Length: 320
Ligand SMILES: Cc1cc2nc3c(=O)[nH]c(=O)nc-3n(C[C@H](O)[C@H](O)[C@H](O)COP(=O)(O)OP(=O)(O)OC[C@H]3O[C@@H](n4cnc5c(N)ncnc54)[C@H](O)[C@@H]3O)c2cc1C
Image 1 (cartoon, protein in one colour):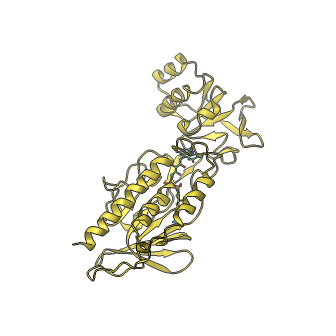
Image 2: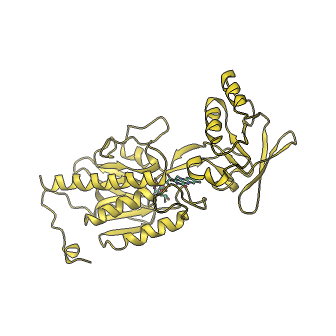
Image 3: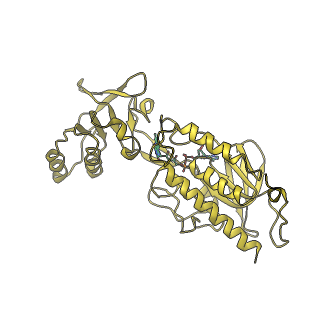
């Protein structure tokens, strides 16, 4: 550790005293990257993590430059190991239950499930989202291997295999046509009335994509989590190697609401400005929790940007 990293930073008298400069909530790609930048800025950081990341069920992370194919857990582990080189960053396995802003001082009070509260000058929300899967037998069990959401992440691994796309209406037609880039054997399963406009049906037909409107009874998997077949309620079966769908999503926490962030996307994503700051001063958001593209490397990049923005704002306040 360079001697300069050990030298205590003298807080200017006009800066309110807090336990930390920044509390980063969530230690996925976004939160780890934010904490890394802030650690390198010698900021006092608390990084809290209260569970698994969104891609935990997946065997591999793809599209991450220099890390293509790495196990999700291994990527996080490497991130945590590299953070441990920065002594001003503290990592706690702890879920943040409550966050509030003191309007008088502009500081934050964060309540942890492990008991106790901490205070900070800035907060970064990197809490991600959760996927809400349709209640079909087998869907949850095969999620991440035989049931997939993103062809950019996992399409290559099921190239040229028999594939299904689950959904209804206009969006399923576009999604099935996209998936046909990876395989010529694609079907649409609507699990009930398709809700497809005539021109969507014709487009699918022109590209050799049949539509199955029967209700799905269950998905049958293999021991390794791959999909074997789709069983319909009418007793028929269709062998498929993978099923793609765009599940509903929910924010992992209501911390943004608690803090008063009011600029939200229709999806519930927390809108940020070009400095990655939310509608509440001092609250930043990065990763899947914002409406940007949901990719691990994008989350990491947003985390870096949030870390830089926090440090620059803190510096402006200190050097006023
Ligand atoms: C099955 C699957 C496979 C995927 N594969 C790929 C891929 O191959 N390539 C790719 O680029 N992307 C992939 N993704 C997308 C990728 O997982 C996300 O874009 C990425 O994880 C987003 O990172 P994040 O840090 O924003 O959120 P997350 O990784 O979800 O991390 C959020 C963290 O915050 C924690 N947290 C939540 N609430 C609290 C709280 N109140 N207190 C403390 N901690 C909290 C969570 O426990 C979690 O650890 C995949 C997604 C899924 C679902």
